[in-house]
Amino acid sequence: MTTVYGIPVSPFVRKVLFVLEHYSVEHQLEPVIPFDLPADFHKLSPLGKIPAYQDDEVTLADSSIICAYLDDRHGGSAQPSVYPQGRVNRARAQWFEEVGDTKLVELLGGGIFLERVVKPKFMNEPTDHGVVEETINVSLPPVLDYLETQVTESGFLFGEDIMLADVSLAGPFVNAMYAQYQVDAERWPKLAGYIQRVLATPALQIRMAAEKAIMAG
Ligand SMILES: N[C@@H](CCC(=O)N[C@@H](CS)C(=O)NCC(=O)O)C(=O)O
Image (cartoon, rainbow, N blue to C red):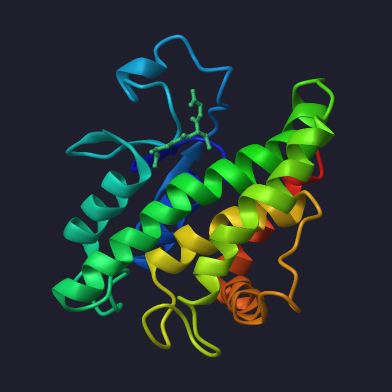
């Protein structure tokens, strides 16, 4: 059975589950929590990170690599691809995936979600409010200024269909939302509207419903 190892609230695991669901690939999720890894987990994920992935032909780690593999193997079916057409748009999609996976996960995941949710709720550690304030008021605004210039007032990054780049970009905002942070719609109106549209899609609604139990503790 195709198996994803990780927890669904991880923005990286969320990407992989989105692609599996998009291509209707039967799969199971084997819970693996970062910082409390099973003894032999490095055999699946040599860098010790989630997600790891295994099916009848390959074992992989890293969400972007897993998603590209899944598209190679299961794309081209009746479903539209999770990547846009054309080399320019495909390169741009990889860029937005990278922005989500790096800067946004660092700021929204590490600076807000980790501090406000993971540390107090799951690690028995206090929130560092200084880190949260610095993230929200200093580090994040220039990144949001940039994203405000990249999204449009309707649709998604590449038109009317939600794609992997959208899930990668909006995913860390889902985690920040769990930590009571939302983009200021007066200061960044296009970005705030774009995030709301992504979150309202059936694909994201399915993901967030599956994450509810964990977020409820
Ligand atoms: N580039 C990797 C990043 C994966 C990642 O950093 N996962 C986090 C959880 S959200 C993790 O496992 N962190 C534990 C660690 O870095 O040791 C991917 O796209 O899969």
